[in-house]
Image (cartoon, rainbow, N blue to C red; front, side, top):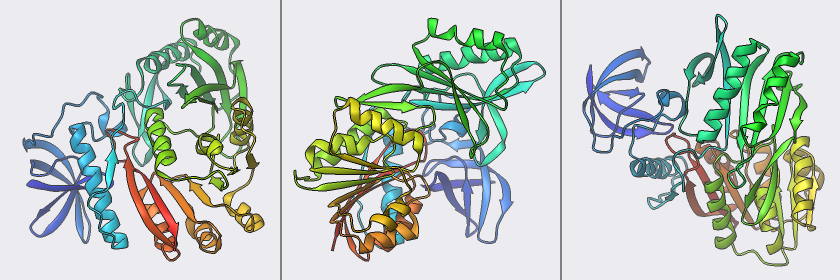
Length: 425
């Protein structure tokens, strides 16, 4: 069937209406006439796939990755129009969910739109005795698409991925099931991570792997075995971390530690927070989900004290190293879950709270703690508008929403990073 696309709705589905029924398809820009392949019928909408563009939009762009629908499904959209779409989506979400009308929400463009990712995670798939690298299909963890090059990561990361793949194939090392590569944008250091279902890797394979630093700027090679809940990390060669520099501060990043994937965009956000929020020398900042300490360390010299709360022991150990190498002495670290910290230390005052949680958000328990907590400001950074809006519904009982800014950490994808400023009523 044929239909005209009306708009793109979060998280990235193209919407059209035919015969009074809503249809969601995987690709299509506003006012484009497309040919659809119907996939499933629901009670109140239809799911389809775009199989042909009959009348193209002037905002349509050429794609670079063969597998773009898996890694970055907005590649077919001109970048300025991607930002326009995300701005409209944020405005619509806030209006629909919170009844807040703000059509002028700013979306800040990424300084780099290709090669911006500082990490990649790839699956190793075997066909007969030949290995290949693959991404799993969105929301389908047991189906994969093979890749040879991805334009969201640097040329050096692509080269290293192919080099380790060649070694895996040559030695038929089927124990390696996934590989990870992290890169420092400032120092161009690389960290290679090999995920194996067994620690019994052949010596010939390991001997070939530790030859890679002769060709690449690899600082460390890590082996990880076990499932998500019982992972064991082994240092195969070199260091267990790489170093990233932001605004003169150095951050050590480990194989399993969290760090924003777009360093240039992170720098922009950090500068905006520092310049637009008027911190004073006598106040205390509490940094929840603080990871390796990015926000707290960058703001530490503007305030009297920083409290960092982080559940991951690996992150905490790196955070302590980062405090030492940056000569930060007014930062107290708590290695515990944020919920636990609130239950135990709810009387420990903070003037400003910085929250950068995982995609699931902070949830009802922490929101209710915040309504009772003596905190004047909350800077809530979210990678999922849905969980952000869910949490704001609770927080707005005690706080006013002063500022909403979108940051395009993930060009060519539907993902939106949002930074909101809340002030206690």
